[in-house]
Image (tube, rainbow, N blue to C red; front, side, top):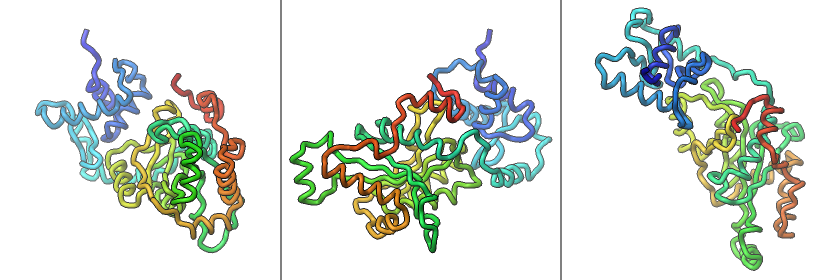
Length: 322
């Protein structure tokens, strides 16, 4: 009996598709139809394997059943259905995608804050073994006036090497350049799509200009080659990192594009934030107290949920991987 392959899945999906699909869309459609269960793979990103095989197939096999439509992103369709495609099919698809609104979810943006808190504290790729704590900044407590629409970050974070450095070294650091403190700024979104990414990104740029590292964070990020390339370009140009929080497999959450680390804090903006928001001012006061007492008072910062998977299941109504 022949092994059911990625190309078999693509063929079944594209037989009934009403328009050309990206390889990510092919995989998602196959998943919804239960076809992905037939694929025997242990890879974490099987849709990438599907994409690779489709690209090679249409490029190297003249007798392929598939055809590539468009370039960025490439979409796939069946050759024997080519006559069904209008000349402006791709243009119409892209126009509709740019209008798509954020997908409805059963949770609010603030419900994913604990996922970011867990990520910052537990994910070694991000914290490199450091204990990074976070604090939610409530926008409703800010003074709304003037040019302050995009000044308030959703979450702030900090790192102090109290457990990593010897006490004498910390004291000497304070007497010299005092660069042991690291501050982080996070702009949170439930999802990033072609419809909202520009506003979300420049909101993060505005909100994070004061910190050592600034990030745009989302639980869902459109898996589209052209879209991801644009996010990478923006991250490289403006120094804002992008983090994908994965509720399905929280420990597989990752930094898609790293932030550019700033050596100098923007004290003017920090002062303005303190004037505008009592949460932010309290955050700085608590960090100062912790530094002087050489002890982190965890109760002053966002709680690190111990059983994060139960939280995801009960609060977000998403079934995480075990």
